[in-house]
Length: 283
Image (cartoon, rainbow, N blue to C red):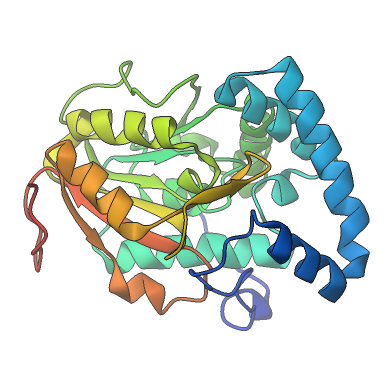
């Protein structure tokens, strides 16, 4: 297995990208005005982003086409920023956070893993390195970010691990085999997905999971009204997503130990059958 090291600060000293404040509705005029007053230097970038998003939504009325265009635009500027990391050190730290969490929850080299929204392999390269050859399968809607993922593999010297990197246009996962993946992972995917995309994934992910496998996904959490910002950032109540998963015959629970990690999003785990310490059964 290839050996890699991180900068000393990348593992422990970085603050979370966002503080978890689940009761805030970021779509309201009051919030936007208050934010602008507190951060006047961010007003111009927000307006540029709003203008770009309005233009892209005119050209791409479906969400996948729209967000693929967003990723193309962001990736041209900086592939690491395109996946939500403000600098390389933070990119490394967030990848380490994802990796350490799943290894602590039992991810073994012989497991097969599906990484939905794999991006440029912020966490993915660590999973590729950890897993047996051919056991990592990354999918993304953006061809631009998948090219960046190939570059990450080359830079890390992981070509002999033979990871699969595949472009997808939806989350039906119908091109993948049934009962195949021990772990399915989606980090910062549902935070950019409207309700119908989230439901599409939850309606089909059980088919590709093994009976003892699980699907972990993060999401931007709110306790108030569910909302979005510029059709890019979506905020959900945990109960909404838990109930949706259970409606598709899945067991689901909020991962309380993730809440104590330095990350602004929450995490839910779903599975086809009860897992150890599982109490939230399908209804």
